[in-house]
Image 1 (tube, rainbow, N blue to C red):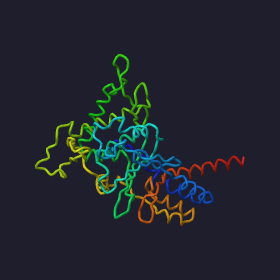
Image 2 (cartoon, helix red, strand yellow):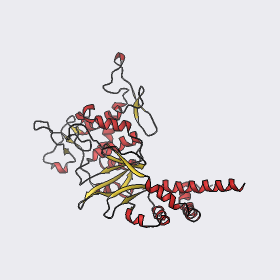
Image 3 (cartoon, rainbow, N blue to C red):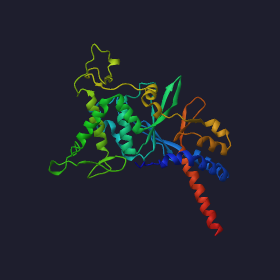
Image 4 (cartoon, helix red, strand yellow):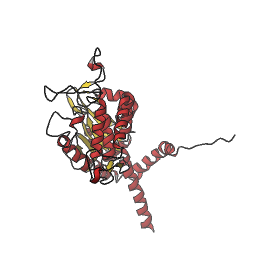
Length: 351
């Protein structure tokens, strides 16, 4: 019986060609490495939207906003499904619509009372769909240090890790998405009582309408419907006795007014230890101290960056505070492009 041999080209390239490419870059392009390193480090900037800071090159900073005029409405942990409306989340809607596309976003977990697991799940989906975000960088506050670097992970890995730990999230999301795909967008009446259908408008999964592909309201409706699926009310109240609330996987949201009806959400607070346990090997930790990197010669800086195996490498200060993010693959890509362009230029000059 004939046996088929299947070659994993990507794996072969990674295993065999990567050391060769790195060696060629370092040996043949040593004179250009200082310029390249300087340019890369200079271009690492960030902008923030909805409390999440996105690490990209040469992007204007936008002030974060999680809700609206009421400080008690926070989309990370306190907003009720009934509060997801234009008056409370107008700024969030604007930023979701107008902020530039981004590759990486920042999530600050604080001391563990800033994010509900449910909000991390749905925000990972929304930012991937609307901003093209591919990974989240996690920070926390520990030992008196704010913005301490924890690690990064791909948004898909985060979503499925949370779905595995909290299976009702995926069920709630499926139900919410099904309601949106029921051919209408709630609350937008047209002539004859018709409403525009929701559709995917780009390769990231962004949702718009057939009449306005840029409309972000379907994303806001998806958020609202998802929360309504896991909150009580409107869902039946959780059985909290004799179970301790802290051990029941339900969180009681803060009351805005003393007479408000208690609202519970089927979720848990999430901190950096939870993230590490949830993601395991899918949480990457590579970092370089900014001060040490700057103290190296340009060539050594470049070697230090490329010696890391992760796609993204964090720049941190002396106590581990997050300062920025480098895309190692992009840096290598620039070097290889320069190498190829230089070879082509030299060939043309000889002829």
